[in-house]
Image 1 (spheres, rainbow, N blue to C red):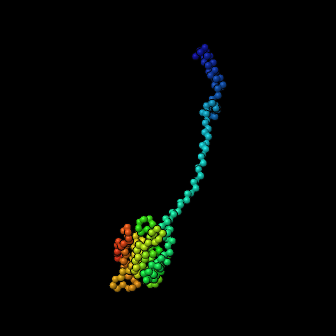
Image 2: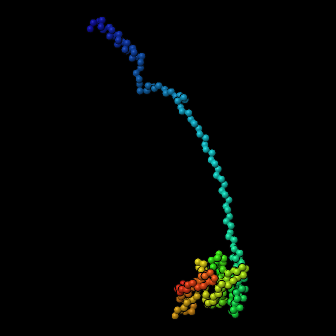
Image 3: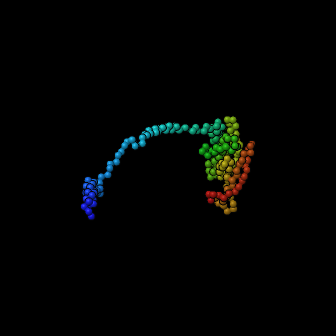
Length: 206
């Protein structure tokens, strides 16, 4: 190679080495350019005020339910002196017995919405109840609808019907313990209480 061609080549290599010395090679820990942050890039924030709760109204005071007012007829029939009245009835009939107010039954037997009184009559002895009277009110006076006499009698009201029960003995029954009961149910015909059904049922107490 001639001297004229080698000289320019050496000059180029020297320039390249000087450039490399001025530009350091990037190392593993080379610093990265810092990020820039601008408030102008954030969206505006809207603050919504909290909803104000509406207070619940105070509870309404309890309303008292008025008690049913008894009808004048019910008040009148319960005010009757039944022992005195039945004593007069029995005296007129030539008999004697006792009436206990706790045994009197009040129920509507005629379907008019007013109570009747079923008044059992006691023998005050082993015969027990020996009869009963049924009264309704006519104005301010008790009116007798029915009188029934029988030994060892019991009387009840079932579904608005008057039911009278007496012992029914069969052969071999001891005197204390009948094997059956005769039940008579009365109904109101519009003018009177009359027997509507009679049946024999087993004695539940035997």
